Image (cartoon, rainbow, N blue to C red; front, side):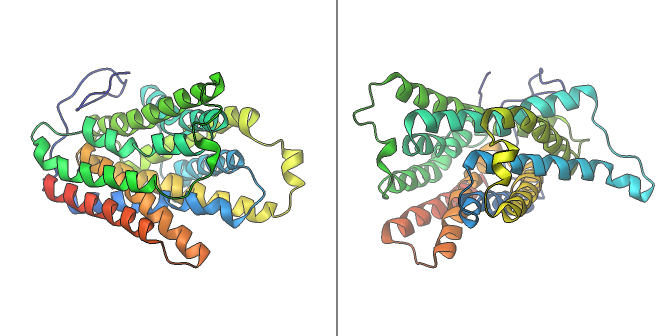
Length: 331
């Protein structure tokens, strides 16, 4: 796939378009709030698995996307209850929703799981953490000078470097197993996952720009259905068999948590991301993705009932300053 500073798609995913406009849209403030809302909802995923221990992360992903698909299907046909016709996608729109969902949902997560299995959790997580940087760089509007974007980039990179100093499990360190083929395969999968979601963020924003007649809600609904269909392929590969799943304690709460995150952190967050992608340039929308880490860490503090350490405060402060600097540059 081609990753450019102004990637674009038509409804069939083929033709290029002009670069995304700078943040001068009359609804730019709403776009910023929508981007932050998406980050706040995505941050739920960091702490949700801790509410019901004993279930694999793969099961949370599978059932979260399944819940998103079921909810999206309900949203698609909800107009029938009001005597109205549902808004159905064309074949081209359905195809675009399917393959973009593979990039940003099911395919991305499968690559991430394979990366963690091969290289541990630390290095793949750090590689994935660079996604906002790539989105900011590749999505920079032509009218924005690099010196304007540089402060936000430097602050965000500094925040990531500080995050790397926090205590981590040693399974991700390239120690004695660094020369093993599975380790480097895991790193390759992590890079592929990073490329996959970066491409999704840019191409999804471009698709929305090229299809103004499709509402952000309808696009989130079609994408949610595509994600639900994707779980039918994910479950046999990643998920725990239903008989084994039902034997675990806390299954009802597990399903409730998956449903809540499937609706909130998937469907609602997708609507918010679509709104932000329409009203903001990809570089600013990419900067707002950093808020996911800030909210995720804040939720973890609340769950643990503790104050962050000095290093954690420093990292989060750098992230917030990076967001503010990027907003100022785009204005």
